[in-house]
Image (cartoon, rainbow, N blue to C red; front, side):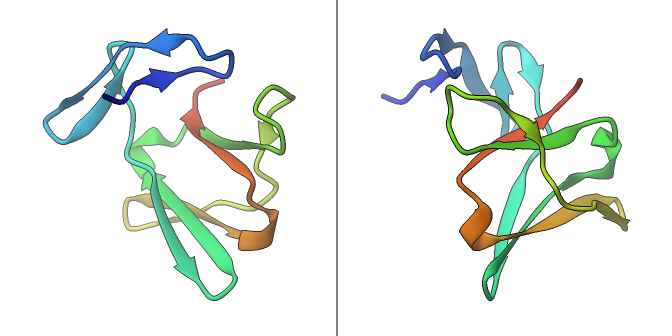
Amino acid sequence: MRQVGNVTANIISASYVNGSLVVGGTVWPTLSIAQTGTNLTLSWPATAYALTLQTTANLGGSWAAANAPTVTNVGTISLTLARAAVRRLLPPYQP
């Protein structure tokens, strides 16, 4: 059995609906991750243009917007990060 939890280890309701992860009753956009050399490219649908990727070095610490420019191309928003700099990633969130 697997469960989804928040940063304080509280269980959050989650299920799969039509191939998408539904967390707490909300369907989140799909986050794709691809490795190219020493970089990671993260992308999500351009329909989620108001969302931002956040990173942290410590799950219990502060989160901040990823320090990388986003690129929109053919319905997809993406950004590239150096693999060595990636520690923890949070799917796009709505501020």
